[in-house]
Length: 136
Image 1: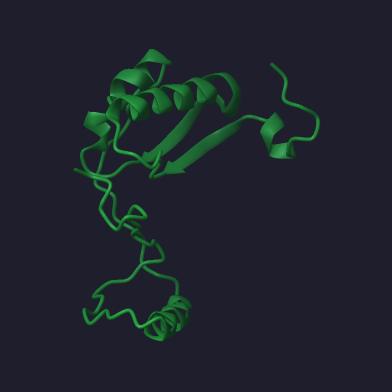
Image 2: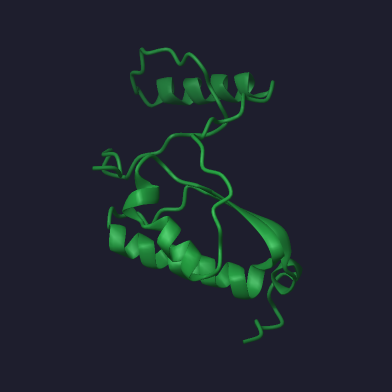
């Protein structure tokens, strides 16, 4: 099970920490996401993570339960160390400039957004291309 020689250098070594923020398949199907996480934890265990390595997995509200995250992770030998609410970090100082550019683009495209954002982060909250939220 060796990767082809054209793969990046990082692919061939194991890591102490793996971070996976907000994984999603683009459809709201709990069974598929559970299988997806199972494959993710399998790959972590066999290929990506060193012994006693740590995984940071960020999920939206309710996904942990719906996708049976604890069941699929323990199946591959992982133990939950901590579970907490996700709080995005504060924006870097240069974000204000990026937001000004984004606002100008939105105004150019005649999108009306009159609500002011109280606390911005450099995380962008996205929705499905239909404009609907992924959550039901």
